[in-house]
Image (tube, rainbow, N blue to C red; front, top):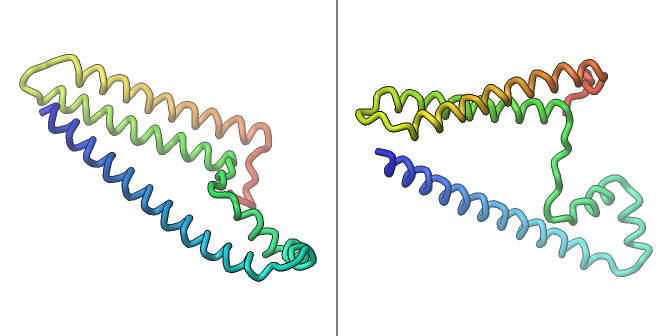
Length: 146
C-alpha cells in the first residue's frame, strides 16, 4: 500500500517537472524570437534611446530578463500561507485516515499525518498573524490589491 503511494507520487512529480520545464522552454523560445525581431530593427543608439523613452519600450527592456520575480505583497504572502496550510492539513488528515483504516497499525502514517497537520495549522496561524500585523502596520491597501 505504501509503495503504491510512493510510486504514484513520484510519477506525478516527474510528469509535473517535465511539463513545467517544457512550458518554460516554449515561453523563453517565443520571447527570444520576439526580442530578436525587435533588436534587428535597432540600428543606432538613437533608436535604442527612442525605444527606452516610452512606457512600452521600458517594459520591453525590463522583460529581457529570463525570470522575473513575482512581487511579494502582503496579500500574496498571506494567500500562499493559507494555500500551504490547506494542502498540508489535507495531506495530514489523509495520512491519519489511512492510519485509522489500515490493517497493520505502523507508526509511519501517524507520524507523517500528525506532522503535516501540525505544519498546516502552523501555516494558518502564521497567515492570521501576518494579516493582523499587516493591517496593524498599515501595509494592506484595500483599494489596490496585488
